[in-house]
Image (cartoon, rainbow, N blue to C red; front, side, top):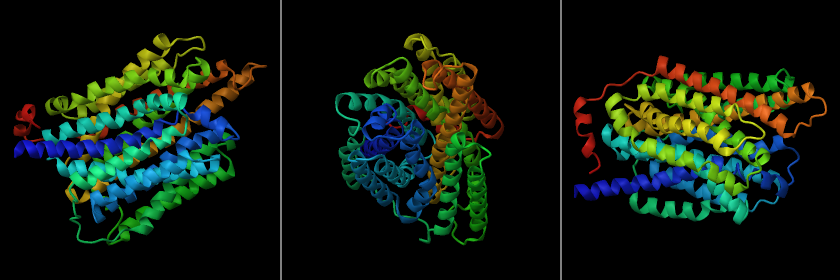
Length: 485
């Protein structure tokens, strides 16, 4: 009976992890297809092309808190299957898009669906596995999938784009999503809400969603319009007003979207703050490296995707061993060590050359970064969810995913701005050089990666100063070798 129960738990983990893999995959899977999408749908400029990625991450990050709280209030499995269903429909329409506007709108809908699905999925994991070694082992698998999905997306996207069509980057979600829904209805418990009310704070959701989205929109437009442009400044002011209004709203509501006392639980506040600069590094690395491989080294989509394959293997290997490492040393020390690997990897990539090669210019850097990511995503997930009561697990999951997605969107916006300014400066200092020349492009990547190093250093400082190691009962770790058997 115990073996059957363990198998059932592992099956549940596999179902929700597959859904999470699909969500993370869709952040990076389109990167390799961007040049093909640009030509097929006649985008007006490369800067507009960024919205294929940003529209997804923006709505994903903006709606995660609403999705996480909805999972707590209305049931985890219900919201999970609803999110997957919407994701399937949006993916199908995205793949059928005949113009850039339709594609961007449906990418935004995909993001909303992911925001409903993802926190419910992590909340199901937290409810299924007991806190301690059992949950740490499950979250090690979860963290590996979350981090590895981004790298796998580039490979899968390359294969689909080159041998089928860029549209299959979206069509692939349809059969996977349907399979996940059917499996979830059969094997995942309903997890009825334990919260005594069903009041969803819509005014709070409106304030925080519009506030966050306005901020990221301003950041994405600032590089082209100028940071002191009146329109951009208006976006920043509006964002501040909306987010302050959100905090005031939460203090006054009887049933707020985010009970502010949740930030006093464990390491929720510290882990979410640390998450911001980490994902800023991750998203920008994939974005700029993909451009470098295809536009400068002239790799095909498949060859470009294969170039990222070592990241998936290294992350999977590292993440699978993190439960034992954390059981022995806790999660604070790994969270301090991992940003160093990220910083070293990005520093190495900041020296890429126009006439470089993959093995010399790229491989050592991504190897270091993959090692850091395999460590950090597992450790930070455990740090952010330890000690969280079950009735708030969806909200805690939503917060963690929000900091991840918004950190990535803001990081990409800032580094895209850094890249654009670097190209302008290079062209000005080298008369006769075109902005799209390989030398101008590579120069801009140097600056972007160096700013990424700064993000990694910030993550180290935040984890060192803010993360507190939560003591676990010693007995829990003594039985760790037999957990799951």
